[in-house]
Amino acid sequence: HPASPDDPELVALRRLPELQDRLSEVYQYPHPLPSQICFRIEAAGQLAGEASLKTIRWNNRKAEVLIYLLPAFQGRGLGRQALQELMKFGFETLHFHRLEAEVYEYNHPARRLFESLGFREEGRLREARWRNSQFFDIIRYGLLRHEVPTNEGPQAEL
Image (cartoon, rainbow, N blue to C red; front, top):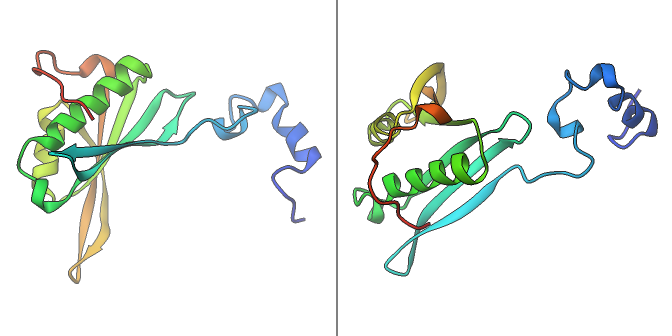
């Protein structure tokens, strides 16, 4: 039978102790926590792109990293600075255990960037991206807090 998410019987069911370790954390908190935190990337007073922590899973202490820059701002090290700041914020401020990223296989600069900062390829979604009449893989990267490389130099402000 159709029901709404706030159906009293379903709400009561989700609160049963024997179900707590099986339910998504979306149901474990009485008040919703933010599922994303977004930052502007600026250079010389201009908006250059975005750096975000998306799909945040507070209970599992993890988030997905998203960074993009307008073409005019690429190749200046802004992406590296933004990723370093997101890593610092995620691991040191929010105390996450894990950061993840998805990168299209043809985005070689992004792949090099993530790998250079310690992210490891953990899997591929085979032929999951359609572009220019062709399918490409989406590469899944992950980085655990204890794997963060040290001595990365000065951090930039987002």
